Length: 220
Image (cartoon, rainbow, N blue to C red; front, side, top):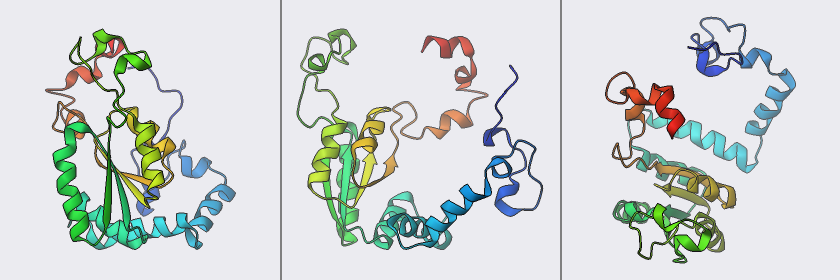
């Protein structure tokens, strides 16, 4: 394996920053970061801004419910703590049934869900320059995903927290970029692993060993 020139947190074996029970490695970002920069972020979390509210709400949900409730429930708990009642859902077409269940959960919690599907606008893929040969079913009308419009429509609804339900890689990036409300993710799309992408990492030495093959990766 080639030598890594620019070491970062993924190369750390100490994790001293968490419990302060070991020592910082010589390339530690905590040690290398100016104290003033750390202080500025800490001061933000101590204040009364939305950022501070969000940071403390997230920590409270973690502390109260660590390994006790699902992410579905965590989103409900988090939304309540940041006083978000209007919950936007940016849903993939392929996860609409799961989204319908999630909306029932939100309504049962006294929250107001509003969903916008990825195919909203119904624009054929060829209209944005995607060759017909790259459609899943060539020679048919096949709508492109429209994450920018999803975000814009949720912005119009003045949602206070938006939840991603399985948007494609890259489409989720555009949605986050254009969303005016905070964004969190309930489902990360991975059709191969049943939407559990961590499985590929866990099986990187067995079933998924191709992900560490440079030749395979160069062809992607």
